[in-house]
Structure formats: C-alpha cells, structure tokens
Amino acid sequence: MSLDAVAAVHRLRSGFQERQEALDALRPDPDGFVAWQTSWLPVVSHGAADHTSGWYLDTESGYLGRWSRHHEGQPEELDTLGTYLEEVADMLEAPSLATRDTPGLVGDALVWGSRLDPAREGAWRPLAE
Image 1 (cartoon, rainbow, N blue to C red):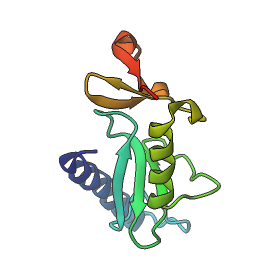
Image 2: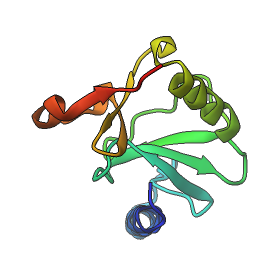
Image 3: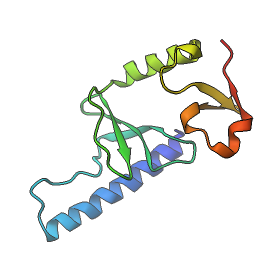
Image 4: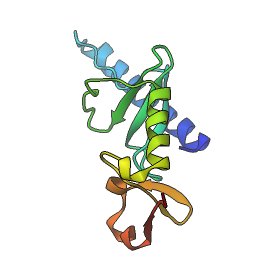
C-alpha cells in the first residue's frame, strides 16, 4: 500500500469505529464490537484500488490481523510482519514455491494470481525464476 492509501484506510476505519462507539453509547453492547483500533496500521490491501480488505499490523502486539467490510475472523495462526515478509520474499525468489497465490506482474505492479482482475488477465505475466 502507498502511504496515502495507508492514511486513507486508517482514517476510514477509525471513522467506522467512532460511529460504532456512538451506537454503543445509545444501546450498550456487552460484547463491545471493535471495528478498528488506533494501534492498527494497514500494511497490505488485497488489490491496488481495494480499501475494503487487507492486512494490518497491530503495533501493540506486533502481529498481523485482517480487516474487511465483512469482519471475518482472524486466522488461527497469526504472523508477525517479519514472518509474512520472509514468506513473500521466498515466493518472489522462487514463484513455484508459492502455496496459494502465484506472484506476477501487470505492467510494473506486483500482483498475486488470486487477486487478479479477470479483465486484466491477459496483461498478467509470471515472474521469471
């Protein structure tokens, strides 16, 4: 994500949390739904123009979490940013080792196979090993 996108997503998600807290003040929820925390820093979106889902770094715990408009649960095993970046670096060095998404390029942008817009499939080219 670009720094502008990071700031925009953080502002947007923080606004969601403020609205949720205003609703909770009107009708208290014992579970206290959390839409966003100020310590969460978005680091990866699931598409260049997608600000509805991605991964954030919890700056308090050091672990990655997932955000989305549908508020899916967190993965069973949480990664640190370092672990995640090591796995991505391994996939970029040896794309054939990618277990889920295959890295490739559209123009000069790095994209992952499962996140490719079907309209742009013809522009996708795999990374050379």
